[in-house]
Length: 144
Image: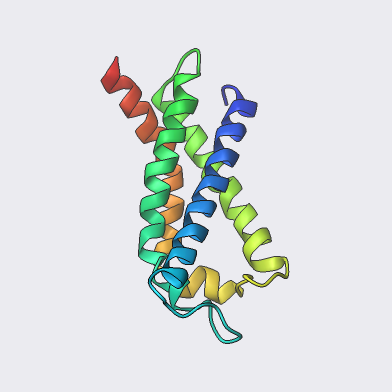
């Protein structure tokens, strides 16, 4: 993989940004649209109503950050984009398992809630993350 450190920098900045956008969307739903917040039984309507938007946040932001990464490579290529996409998706899958399922915190989900009940959104999110560098590369090629 070309420039692994830069790839991880762009990945983590984007991951944090996507998470922040999701949290802010949930807060907006609760505070402005007066949807029900999280309680002891569920994540709440404010969060649940954001789920269909999650793949959109991811495809837009990971494509932008994929473009930033690909633009910084000495020799951008489709192969480099595919490798970056695979690495990004793999890192995300492992980190999500640890951060959203295994570590106990108020927003923790069970394995079933995260990987079964969150369908089709979680699959679309991982596909968007994989596609991000590829789309970024295609934008780079179109601009050349």
